[in-house]
Amino acid sequence: MNILMVLTSHDKLGDTGKKTGFWLEEFAAPYYAFLDAGVNITLASPAGGQPPLDPSSDTEDAQTKDTKRFKEDKEAQERLANTKKLADVKAEDFDSVFYPGGHGPLWDLAVDKNSIELIESFVKQDKPVAFVCHAPAALKNVKVDGEYLVKGKKVTGFTNTEEEGVQLTDVVPFLLEDVLKANGGDYQKGADWESYVVEDGLLITGQNPASSEEAAKRLLAKLNA
Image (cartoon, rainbow, N blue to C red; front, top):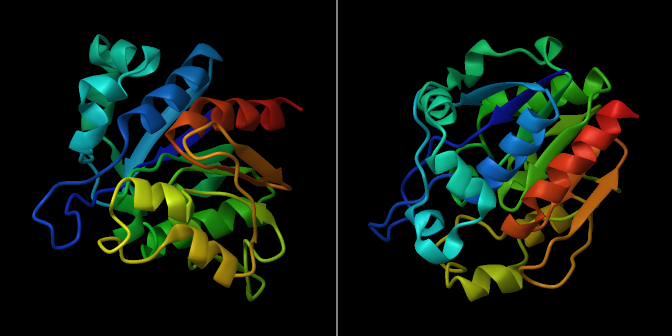
């Protein structure tokens, strides 16, 4: 089984002068869920090479069993440092795609033409697509047969109240919850910061970092069904 993981290449947190990128737990938890299930994993990002790590996800209080495992895993670090360019990957080579979050995707993956076309290709090929936390931002401009992919579908993602909690409401280019609703999504949410995952057809979405492992396990279950 072959799964593609797509990470952000964006590292600027708006005009704050601070850094952003992908969220470590949201990469590490799915990566090891897939690896331990015997899946072949390919990593990609818009720019290729090393995706930027959100420094907030690398603090002591943000560590989990999977992030600690990653820090000891030279092979995983090497693979992450050498992601393929998004333009060079094709949906037909994979069974599914998983997008980890972090704030970066709000800026690049939301508007990246290669990402948009890739997600549309997976769906047209009847293959499941999964996104966690801010990564559903990558769905913002995805349409299938002229309609937003999320229209009429159960979907979740980082909540407005979670964004308030990290004090970035006025920094982000858009609020993910608002965009998913505006595009016709049947937006659902659990308690802030608790694991919450929804599935609707080929679409799997997780609400926040705590949802990363569950979202990956749901994707594996769907692929194995």
